[in-house]
Amino acid sequence: MIRYQLGVTASLQGDYEEAKRLYQQGLEIGERLGDQRGHACILQELGNIAQLQGNYEGAQRLYQQSQKVYERLDDQSGRAGTLHNLGNLAQEQGDYEEAKRLYQQSLEIDERLGDQRGRAISLHQLGMMARLQGDYEEARRLYQQSLEIDEQLGDQDGRAATLHELGVIACLQRDYEKAKRLYQQGLEIDEQLGNQRGRGEHYARFRNHCPGSGEQ
Image (tube, rainbow, N blue to C red):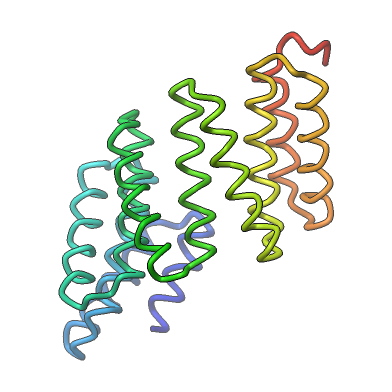
C-alpha cells in the first residue's frame, strides 16, 4: 500500500517512470500476498499513466485486466470505475458512441449502489458526449442533474466543472450573457478553492467558445 501511495504521488508530480516502477513493485508484493483488489487498483493506475503517455492500446489492455479482477471479486464499485476509465479512453480517441455506452454502464452500476458521487461524474461525462455530438438540450439536462447532485454533496470542484460546461453550451448557442454568468459562477468557486488551473480554464474556454462575445 505504501508503494501504491508513493506511486500516486509520483504520478501526480508527473514522474511517470518512477510511478510505474513503484506500481510494479506493488504488483509483485500484492501477488505474493494474494491481494487481488490491490492488484486491480494498481492496474488501473498503470492504465492511467499509459493513457496520459498516449499509449491507448496499453491503457485499454490494463483497464481490461483490472476489470476482469473486479468481476471475479464481484466488486461493483471497481467495475464502475473501470468502465468510466474505458469510457474516457474511448472519448479521448473520438469514439463518442462507445464512450457513451461505457459511461451509461458505469452510471447504471452507480445508481444500483447509490453512489451519488459516481452518478454525478457519469452524468457529467454523458452530458459532455451529448454536447460533443451537438445535442445541446440533452447535454444541458444531464449537466443539470449532475449539478444538482454536486450541490447536495457540497462538491465544489464538481460544481465548477459543470458550470464550465453549461457555459460552453450557452456560448455555442450564442447566449453570451448567460455564458458569462455561468463562467463567473465557476470562476468564483475556483477562486474560493484557490484553484489556479480552473481559473485559467474559465478564461480559455470563454475565449475559445465565445469568439463573438466581444471579449478581447
